[in-house]
Length: 134
Image (tube, rainbow, N blue to C red):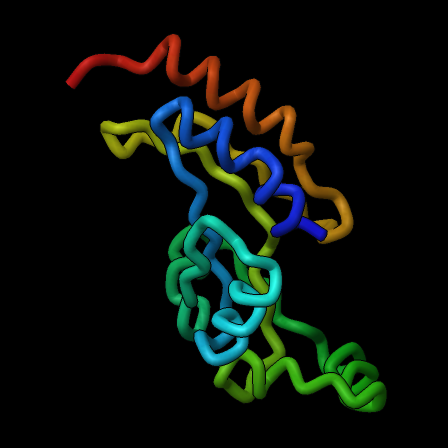
């Protein structure tokens, strides 16, 4: 699971003076339980109604046939996100430097393909070495 993989690299991320923050459309009610269950050492924030994902152009709206299929399986995505539309963010991982500049962006519409945590660490170390001054 993605969160568990990020948990594994968290101490190294912190040693580099950085931190992991997860942003999800799931309501806090659900993320709080997951945070506790996995004993995550980083924050999970709710992107209510995908407002931030929209600003990055990273929102996927299910077509009607897919929405109907998910409903037939008993999926209640709308309940987890607090809205009636079946939308998801495109998975993305960013490295933002201390000057609030995005130094690395990994985005893939295929939700099954995620960046390796080791690659994220490598990019973070590279960013630390090349970060411009204030």
